[in-house]
Image 1: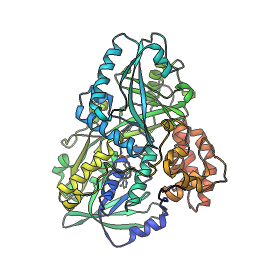
Image 2: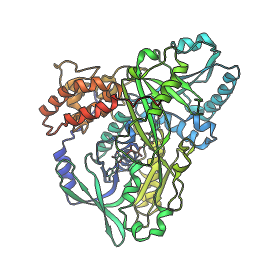
Image 3: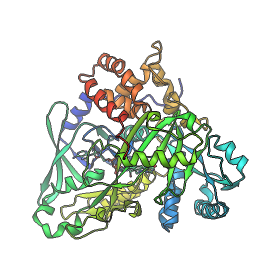
Image 4: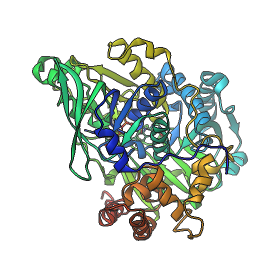
Length: 546
Ligand SMILES: Cc1cc2nc3c(=O)[nH]c(=O)nc-3n(C[C@H](O)[C@H](O)[C@H](O)COP(=O)(O)OP(=O)(O)OC[C@H]3O[C@@H](n4cnc5c(N)ncnc54)[C@H](O)[C@@H]3O)c2cc1C
């Protein structure tokens, strides 16, 4: 065994017993996506008494459905958002350092087909290198056609002039979320999934706690807290609608309530044969002026994404036919073999919580229909009752967002300012980070590499049982239940393992075996039927737009 601390148990009955104890938390975070988890970790690392409540599973919302880029945002560079790009590049470096088992550098290649493309993109990416400064991952290089083909063996060679290679990072979003939850717990935070918040509690007009419900038993808990943070992503306005101070002062709603313009992005996953090698393909300008990626990830290739305004907020958004057509057509133009609907192993969609500027009531940011031009920066709102809401931003900047939220708590007088001087996450490594990683592991099929220095503890959960499928072992399933808050087959196959996102048919096949192991681990309702229906959705693509 290594000197790495043994993982904490995440037995639900014990977590709920802690929730029932009479106490006042310093910080209660509502929402267990990238934003809320980051805040919980920042607050816990300062030594504050922290509770986080998630309605479903950690990262069930947008935070498991990203393109998996840890990036400064080349696209935002073109939009002139230099400060945002610089901050993101700094955060990129910190994330790669804090979780090397889950986030690693990745070379991106832009193949060029016109003589001016190479100097044009080359110059922009050199500026990207300059903004990264000392935390750059490698210098941008101009490539000739042979060098381009060596990095992208399946690139369309007809008319190929060469390419531009630059560096960014990629990561495993849902596993990072679980790791943040576990690291916060290791710092004393109480983290609970399947515990939606239904109501806010008040003392003399100020938010002083909330009511949440254990989704498994229906039992409600009243929780007292000095400060409540609403980090519910695209659903941020729903909790604000519960806030007395907003309800009693409707004229304030326009300026104080967070507004979100949801924008859907879809991804299609195909076999690695479509893009062998270790580099990603970057398409800088699609037919409608967006960027698109083909990325090697966990033994498959992710194609995406889109930017489609939506007016509704489904928990499981579905790819639309025109989005599928768009991705297949655009990637097909750059690959020697164009992927078709039959090649897609899994298709999934997520909703970006794009923060609106404070707007008068009735304004709809999506009315313009151009969400790709809306800022990816985050916004924090304080309601008159002291409820703090945060939305927007991106995964890459989750840590900086969390720091800003904590600063807002101190500025608003919700927490004693002496806490501002403590802790900090700039030098805080996440669980599993102690193991040195072989550089390419995030490109390889799932396996123990995702657990970093905790891999030995995973293996110890079951040494004799044979692999279930594609790198997933019974030991990983048992570890997910015992130490990673997993409660259902979906939790295991969508967010502890990523099999649902990689190969939905295989995930369906293996689900009964996972359910059996969950039952052996005393999970009462693994929800196999529900998982089967869900996985069917990741497989069935809408028909081509005629
Ligand atoms: C298609 C797409 C691609 C992206 N790609 C990238 C990328 O490559 N790199 C990058 O850095 N960023 C990327 N992003 C952005 C990034 O994924 C998001 O900014 C981030 O995941 C948002 O996290 P969040 O915590 O704010 O929201 P969420 O992850 O949605 O979390 C909010 C949580 O709140 C919970 N909740 C809601 N109501 C309640 C309640 N009443 N009680 C308790 N819990 C509640 C929800 O269940 C949910 O889990 C991408 C986004 C999309 C959509």
